[in-house]
Image 1 (tube, rainbow, N blue to C red):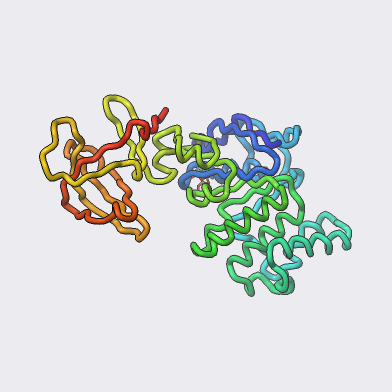
Image 2: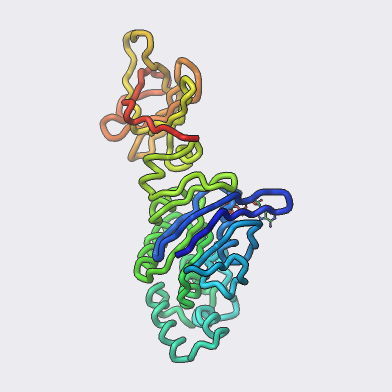
Length: 325
Ligand code: ATP
């Protein structure tokens, strides 16, 4: 339905995005995930028509929209700063786009009633943005975008300004809303947990390139690269005898070291611990040198460890995740 082919953007002499290719199905919730500066927003802005690609193509429903101005695309964008009109009421903010397009008054009323209900803004229609909470303002921004019934909604870190609790509940709301409307969502975030929670598929970006595209479980369980392995969930990446692989902290077996073990066993010392309540995180410094290993222990297994303790550790080879890059 939406197809990006080798999309690239160079600002002056800086390559912000290199050869991003992606096919998105109708009604899909796709998240572009990556650290600050990796090019996520630039991809979204190229889709919206706010930034002109240096090369590559964007096709929406069989039509090449690469060079179309924003208002001629069947896409709407929701920004991190909600960008509501401060002097207008909630209702006027929502209806702004439909009035510009001279949609019939009756149709406007119908659509307003529908989106106000969907975004749970009933009773707040006559308020001005400064009389709303952050979460309510965010809902108005979403209502204003979906009232136009775009085929695709582009969302650039729409929840980043909200506190954790509100963010979690709005994540849930957004996902429900998206499923009910059947609109394709393309969502940008640097928060891997948010991406895992919301998405049908995740596009992991780093340094302007797409490192992996997959369903959340896939990018978590089978990361393609060292970067993805360390960015999605916590992970130990190891390089031994010329090969690179990753091992999840909950796959590491750990025993207290009382007697000397035969040569060849992995041994080390617990150099630090963090008790998060639901799990104990242990940092083990290998005797043979190299980076510390992160280990998770839950429940009864989280009991009895102490900093400075000597340990032996290991894992099953089937739990090693081979990294391509
Ligand atoms: P963040 O999460 O911090 O918003 P991002 O992944 O969205 O980051 P982009 O905003 O797409 O990253 O920026 C990608 C790169 O392009 C960055 O190195 C940025 O400095 C650069 N960049 C973005 N916009 C411009 C511009 N108008 N002119 C020059 N360089 C730019």
